[in-house]
Image 1 (cartoon, rainbow, N blue to C red):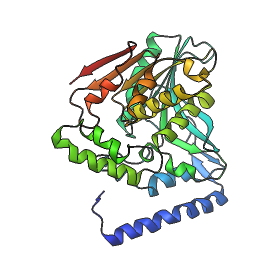
Image 2: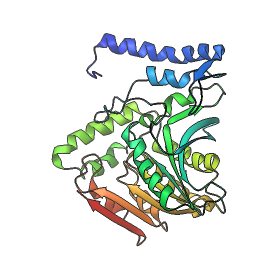
Image 3: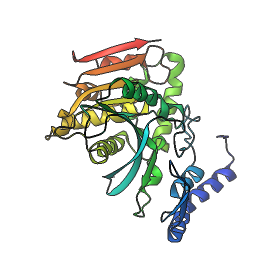
Length: 321
């Protein structure tokens, strides 16, 4: 995709985007869609192809440094996990999201692990799958779930919220004043890139990390039924989802009702792409055993940010190059 577009091309794209909701509404009236299940022949169902439309007509991210992240793929090919559909409610609407499962059944599970990929719709979605396969083969009493955020979809209720709920729509950066502290963490040759990145996130991303955190909590509690008494879990997140997960942990620490947070046994956080208030990093991992993984030469999220987490003895940092 060429991002140095002419004025005419930009106007044409804008008009295309303006027409997407009306087009979806017309297709919804048709109320027919042919889908390919995981097994068996294609089926005609009473739903419009809104996911296909979103994939086709919603532009890929225009944020500098994220151009390689194209739109959603429908299904992950070649996964050994069992694909399930989760239903949850958030932002006043009901949604679906696919997940892939290994190991024990819900009834037989003695330990539960839920993981979420980074912003990429490609290889990032499958990296947790290899771990799930290993755990499924070696820890039969563990239920391992890999969420697929790129499959997020509305239910049969007509609404347009789903159009801005892909990972590329959910990023946050701090205010100009606070951003300077983060930019100073980057090597001098990367600081101009960081300034441009922050500015483009402000302009291009319609949803905040905190909104993403609310969605993740709903997926875990409503979709999986975890985070309640007897259904504690380990959270695994990386990069983009590291920001979502960290924000969720920090927000839960602020709540008077700590019942959900108490069910989080531990967290695995890999180079989280989050720019939060400084106290929120420590707040997120307070009293939660946390494995923090970070490359010392990370060019996107500076390694120095890891020190903000390292204020509790239960946090262990694994660094690599």
